[in-house]
Amino acid sequence: MQGVPHLIELNNKFRERGFEIVAVSDEDAGTIEKFVKNKGINYGIIKASNVLKTYGGTGYPSAWVLDVEGKVIWKGHPAGLTDAMVEDWVKDLAPVKVTKEVHKVLKNAVEAYNKGEFGKAESEVDKYLSSDDPVVKADAEFVDGVIEKRRAVGEAKAAKARDLGDLPKLAKLLEAEAKAFDGSEHGKKCGEEAKSIKASKEFKDCVKAQSELDKLKPKINDMKAEKAKKALEKIARDFPNTPAGKEAAELAKDF
Amino acid sequence: MTKTWSMALLAALAVFATALPAIEVGDSGPDFKFDKSWNALEGATKLSDYRERVVLLEVWATW
Image 1 (cartoon, each protein chain N blue to C red):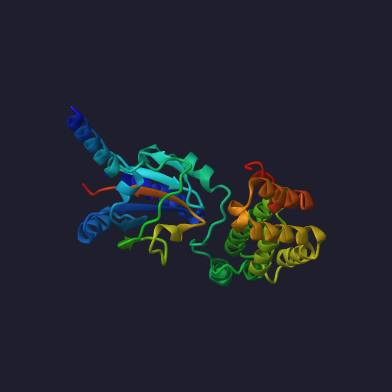
Image 2 (image 1 turned 90 degrees about the horizontal axis):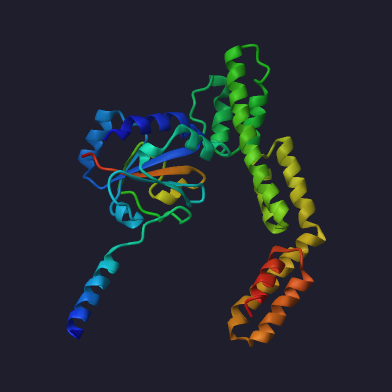
């Protein structure tokens, strides 16, 4: 398979940044293993059956690229994949795991990051950001950059929920961030924002609207169309700026 | 005549029944279990264990 060097190169460049290769064969394990060893393959090789059929592929090799939620964002011949395309897909991802070898004083920071304890990782890194040893300093800056990126990803998600007025989702996201960044200034800020959101009238309206819609939904198909429409419109009117209120308005159009 | 038509219809149905629609851009990538793996993500036993990552799924053969 000529594609192997290409995939090894993509793996070397992008794996640390959240790009994973899942190369599937249905041949017998011995044949695959020999091939992996002979070619020095370092990316993920999987033995599994029926994948080509399930995905409706037309021959070997066939490829699909899936985003972080498992949705297909590209399909084609793997030779058509360029660095620029992969760069574009991973640019907003925070590395899930730091696999780069760092100076031993930063091992604790990396370990904390890999466990999802970003606040702890941050306070570990802070100790070495102004180190006199250039190697330590460079590694500290590298890990700090990774944490910064992870924080930006969380903030982008929160901003999206904020724009949509989805306060229950926003509160949940912020609480998760507060926990992950526990021990840092950012974690404290997220925790405080989550708390103040949950205390607001808008948040309570969102929760109320959702619960009314949830109660109505199972009954709606047994109701007379006119009555169903009215009930939905009432939720939309009582809670106009909530996700459930907007959903109710949309549903009302179908009656 | 009718018989010929129904035979043709049956044959056509058989073809449709075996040909699965291809997964296209925008679709959800179906999950599948791994029988065995080399160099894969730690602890992953199925495709859906790769959430939070961008995945290149390649179906290949050694020959």
